[in-house]
Image (cartoon, rainbow, N blue to C red; front, side, top):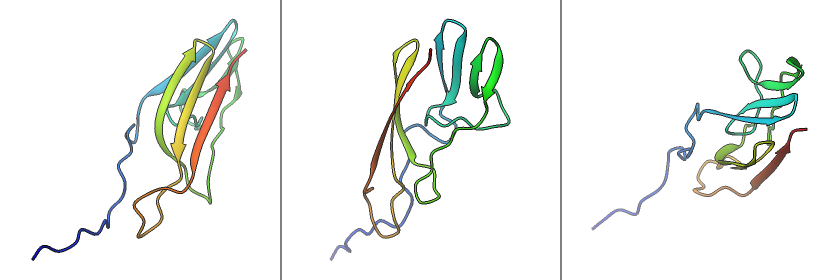
Length: 106
């Protein structure tokens, strides 16, 4: 007789750990972030105005954890939408919260 399947691992992120970058541009302003929508310090990411970085960190946390990134969709050269979800809790296979972020530059 077959055993029932019980999920005991981690969910796979559709974007992967690195996932690439999203760049938004409007006139003399531009923003480089990860595909999760977060801007993390220590690299090329940030919000820039006239080639000066004015923001080097912008990270969203849910109960102390980074949301699991699902999609990043540039809408215009100056705007994008980022979709994520809360991390699944142990013993659960589905997330209980969806996060939708919109970013506009300019």
